[in-house]
Length: 472
Image (cartoon, rainbow, N blue to C red):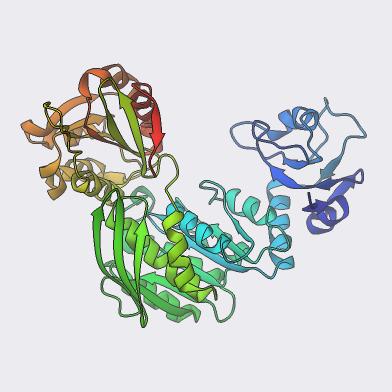
C-alpha cells in the first residue's frame, strides 16, 4: 500500500520530532478500528488518547502522534512528538490539502449534509479517485482527520462540515479550501446556541469563507433565508449557483415514490434528467439536485453522475430501508435513528405516510404505518412547542400509531389525537420489550430521533424480531 505519510514528511508538516524512520498508510484515532500501518493520533476527548498508544503500537500502528511519550511505551517506539496533538492534526490536514490537485467540494447544512456527501462520493468515484469523509466526521477533529487521510493522487474530495455553535464553520472551511461549497438547507437546528434561524444561515454561509478564488457557492433557493446566503456569497465574491423548486438553474420539476424508490425529474440548466434514488422522500431528491449542481461545478460529467446516483443508498440510521422477516410475513423498517430536528422529522414522517402498504393475497388484516419518535435535541427555549407542533403535520393523517420516547416527546404525546396515540416511554430501553406486541406482518415502521434519544435500540430490537435485510 502506498505510504500516506513518511516520518520526515509528517515532521516537516507539523514541526514535530519524528522518532524512527517509519511510513504510515493511514490515520486512526480509535484503537478499535485501527488498521496495521496507521498512524495513531492520540487526541484528548472523553479519554486521553495517550492511554492507548501502547495498545495501538501492539496492534500494528506504524507510529503514534503524541505530545509526550507515555510511560508504558518504549523509548525507541516510532513516534511523532508535537507540542499539541490537535494542532498537529490540523497541520497535517493543511499539508495534505496543499499537496493534492483534487477538486474539493465542501458540504454543510442543517439537514442532509451526510447523505449529500455520500451521494457526491458515489457519483464522483465513478469519474476519478475520490476521497470523502467517513461517517459524520465533520467537526474540529473530523475535518482535519479527513484532510490528513487524503491520498496525494486524489482527483476529487468531498469534505463534510458541521457546527453546533457560532464561529465553528469558517475555520474548518479554511482548512478544506474547497473549490465548491454546498449548503443543503437552513433550518431551526441548534437554536439553543443561536438567536434565530437567520443566525444559523449566516453560520452556514461561513463555509464560503474558505472558498478558493473563483469558487462556486451551491445554494438552496427554496429556503426563507436564501437572501442571507445570497448576501454572504456576494460579500465574499463567490459565484452563486441555485437549486430547488424555485430555481431556474437547477430546478426540481417533480418527485414521486414508486416501487420502493424516489423518482425525480430535474432540469440542470438546459439538460433534463430523470433521477432514480434508492431512498424515499422528496428531501433526498432535493439533496441529489444540489449534489448534481456541485458535481458540474467541479467539472465532472453531469449525465454520468445522474446515472451513477441510482447506485447510491443511505447508510444505517439515515433513512435505510430494512426488511425484517416475521413469522408468516415481514415488516419494513425505516431506520432514520441517527439524528432529528423539526425539518428532518417532518420529512421522515412524509416518507412514512407516502410509503405504500404491501398488498397481500392472503386473507389477513392489512399492515399499519407506525412511528417510534425520540426527543429532538438542541432546540433551546422553543423545544416544547417544536415537539408538540409535530402533531399538526399533515402526514400524521396517514399514520396509524405513534409511540413517543423521551421527556421532550411527552409534549407531542399530549398533543396527538387519541386515535394516533400509542405509548409514551421515558427511554428507548423502556420501549424495547413492547415491540413484539406492537408490530406485525405488513407494517411499515419508522424509527426517528436525535442520537441522544437512543432510537438505535429500537432499530436493534425490531431487527431482532426476525432477520433484517437491507433493501436499499
